Length: 320
Image 1 (cartoon, rainbow, N blue to C red):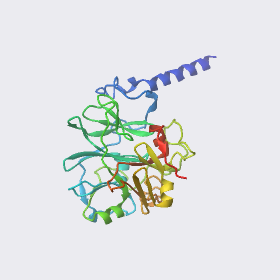
Image 2 (cartoon, rainbow, N blue to C red):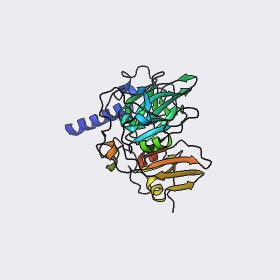
Image 3 (cartoon, rainbow, N blue to C red):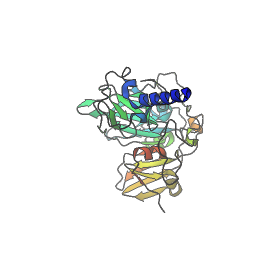
Image 4 (cartoon, helix red, strand yellow):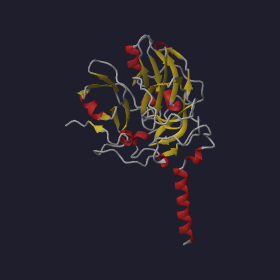
């Protein structure tokens, strides 16, 4: 009976610890945990690294894409803004840093990548008259990176660009249209483009620290419901707002025109989360998402479990 009682007491204590923000106060003394959009604190779990244990980058250096010695099938995040030279941010660097704080012309942007959700999104860093600079908390929610801003120490959900905790709780970041494509495709479309130079950190750039992750049955540190329609948890979907198209459906037909959106698939991009080396990863293809008139749309190519976790009422476009 004594063992049973102690076990129950320990379970209760751990549950209380996970459910209350008190465990974060010493590391985050400037964060106002009384302001939050999180309904259940147990959703937020430590991913392992401490605050800034994954070092975000600020004001990176760039070189012409013509001078870059990178495998041509490796993926990068692309930003093409009017009047500015196109820029590419290789996932071989973002895999280890997850956030890049940059400026393109008059625009302050954050380029982000969460490997555990395969979520690659770009945001406008200007909020309420100030420019925010983002870092990595080391925490996860639904296996997705929780970011923070250095100005208010508020926490943000990367997959949604939504303020979670602190002065910015409930604030929505503005999305900047960006997409992931191969270095070869970026170079062919933008021979005068720029690519982010290798950061000055001792990291194994070009190697994948999540080898075989996308073959897993369940995501890392995820206790939520699995996707509907028997869709594998770590299969990719093309998300536009609260709608998702299974990537395999698009891959079969190469082009879809639905819901006033045009989605296209083209071979030539390796998965960043498959092999030991990014360049050896399986084919996942290059995906573009545009309006019927040709304008680029903010979107994400994320794992199905993450779409279901953050948009449980979202629409699945499965076709016939």
